[in-house]
Length: 435
Ligand SMILES: NC(=O)C1=CN([C@@H]2O[C@H](COP(=O)(O)OP(=O)(O)OC[C@H]3O[C@@H](n4cnc5c(N)ncnc54)[C@H](O)[C@@H]3O)[C@@H](O)[C@H]2O)C=CC1
Ligand SMILES: N[C@@H](CC=O)C(=O)O
Ligand code: NA
Image 1 (cartoon, rainbow, N blue to C red):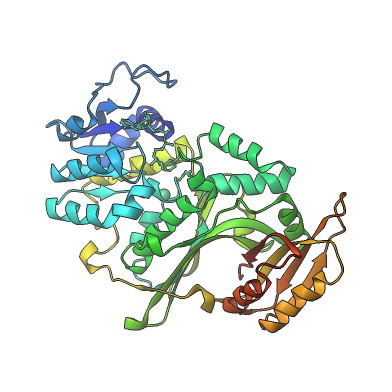
Image 2: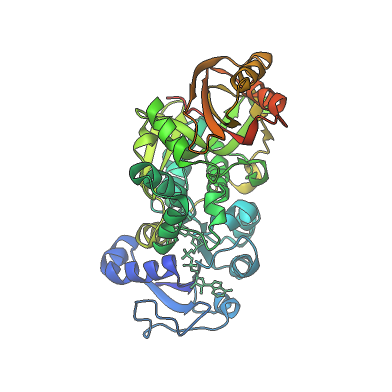
């Protein structure tokens, strides 16, 4: 058999230990498929003595991860440390500068520095791959880079954060409390080191920015992603959505508008109401799903485990197999210099239906004020539901569903209501996902 592909692995947490286990379990099959063995020749993490539930005694431990990246006996550096900058980014630059292949699961780093790293990889003629960075075990990076390469894609959207989806779908299933479900997601290894990235929508935004670049051939523009997390979604919103025929999901949507030089890109992550009949409504737990709409392929749906040790390891090792086979192409489907800069679209131009929830003082005239604001802003109301007063009799929840209309009008209505003494909490707006 040919010479092994020699890997230096940095980071032995959820994903790193998953990779060790996977390579160990499927060693022979991987070698047969890759055409040569894949061998981990050096490992490193922050704490050598930590019990990780696996036997690492046969691996060479290196304390200095930066020195590890430059070792002559290393072909590929595998970064499973995390963090958009800091040691992970230094390691990436060092590995690629040294002409090593570089594989990572780090979406934060790819979203912020992916283009720089792709350019460096091209200069050094070194493979750079990040399948695990988007939607964990779903081979969506490869699918958009290769499988849909013949299509003009116009919309890519989906559920891109396992932790948020787990929290929302468990709240929906069991009526459980937000904090309890976040802790459960952390205990199972889905959440980021800082879970604010998950529940704040930032992790999904990182992934969306990467997918948009690959799918549309545009330069990554993470800063242009409008991001809103799930922290404002309450158990009563979920119950209300259910009564109306929807589930609540954190959805990332990237859409291209216009043609040629007028092309504009809208990238957004927000909690949305998803109709029961939509395929995304059935996506529960840490599962992710990505929908890509191509001019010839039509609507494609990719679904599977978006987080966790085993699925993420599956994606990481698939990248290593590609490198072992000599099959790694341009990381973003075209050389990074050929990616086009796209102007961000104005989110206010979106036309659609929205769910609005107001928490208001329980007194006469409040409904009249809300509906007057809608009228003055030209928002057409499809339904309005007022719930009974709470046990203290102080405030009530009013939910509205609008007819199709420009988002600018809804924003205008909220502006008109700003500062009203009748509103006892900031309103929540969630768009209703179209079929
Ligand atoms: N956990 C998951 O389900 C998924 C995680 N990812 C990404 O994979 C990467 C790793 O995530 P996890 O394994 O969950 O993280 P983790 O927190 O479980 O493990 C991180 C590892 O990196 C090591 N480390 C951290 N800083 C270091 C430093 N300065 N020097 C040396 N070692 C250091 C830690 O000791 C630990 O072994 C992150 O970029 C994450 O976003 C991607 C997809 C899914
Ligand atoms: N924290 C992330 C892990 C995978 O990318 C998630 O919950 O999806
Ligand atoms: Na993936």
